[in-house]
Length: 110
Image 1 (cartoon, rainbow, N blue to C red):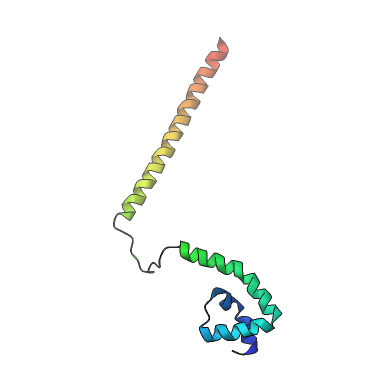
Image 2 (image 1 turned 180 degrees about the horizontal axis):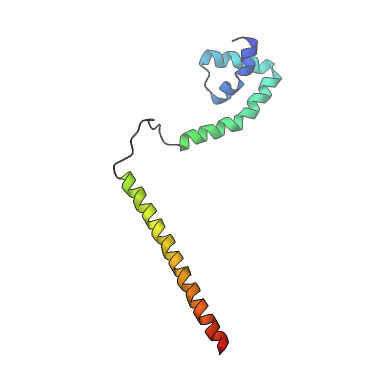
């Protein structure tokens, strides 16, 4: 690993993707280079967050995975339920406004 490449390998070192020989050489460089030591320390929390994210995400799903046969039916059912609820709220609001429009003047007349 050339000197300039060593400075660029800080992120790979922090993520742990270097092989054993490269890790050994980079750690030797790290002991002598305060800039890389600072960079490696700064990459530490980010690398930990990425590792936690990797552990929390499900296993790889192939790019050409097909949805199940019932997925479309389930999605259409959910959309239908939402549309019915929205329509029902609209009708209740309309009925309430009609009642207020008719009863309001009648109450004021008494």
